[in-house]
Amino acid sequence: MKATVTPGGGLFGPQSITWRIHTESLGWPAVLRALQLQALHPRTIRGIAQNCLLDDPEVARARLRRQLAFITVRTFGTREQAEQAAERVRQVHARLIGLDTDTGTLFRVNDEENLRWVHCVETSSHLEVALRAGVPLTGADADAYVAEQRRSASLVGLRDVPADVAELGDYLDGMRPYLSATDEARDALRRSVSPQVSWRLLRLWSRSHGAPLVTQATALRPRLAAPLLTPPLALGSLPAAGALAFATLPAWAKEMYGWQTGKAAEYAAGTALRALRAAAGALPERLVAPEIRAARALMRAVTPAPGADVAA
Image (cartoon, rainbow, N blue to C red; front, side, top):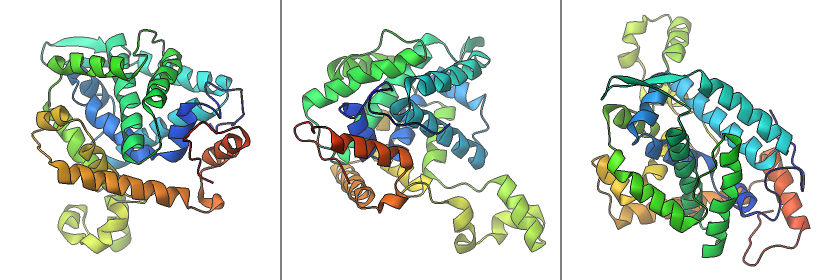
């Protein structure tokens, strides 16, 4: 579904902080950061891993693309489009169950606790990536973004979600005792930062080159495999975006994964995100996503908020 961008027919609008963040920051690092945090909740990642073939890179990438597409429609589309997209998501989730391997009990993927966790880490991730990328936001702007995202939460039936940055931080801190880097979480992290060859692509390559499939792991050379491993996604490859995302995780999350990154890595990630934001803002109009292009035009047509820097 393509979003129909209008000045007043959606959940947000040209004067919202949501539009400012989602027209200026980068979607892939934010979505991958959210996944890396989601994965630390054992039931969340088991619900994902047991219902999605994450070991197939094509399937995993398709899942992330669907998530980005949903965020795009929810952010820039009409209210009717946002509700229709959310209804499809609810229908899918309503059919899914997972197995808690720690307790041996079954759980529903659309469990309220799980939905709240997913919402909060997604909100946190888009805000954090925007700040690291240099989107000009005041403390009040950040609070407004968290508050606006309550409208997104309502689409999946959530009501009791954080209303400002302080509440969001308290929620994340309160969840830490329930989080852990399970095997599934570590596998999801590895796949988000490391390129993987799709078996489907390997089979196609094998047929076209007349080589047995079992020889492909050694037959594929880096230069030959590069187009298969890291197809361009927005402004960079999925592994590069995943590495940037990981560098922006809170220290406690990195420690759970067994990593300790210093200030140099965080500085480098911030520098890279700012450079990517500048590059995205300098793209010719024809290369900008139509929803972003339409939203920016509407934002320029209204009186800009103090400090706003709407890319042309």
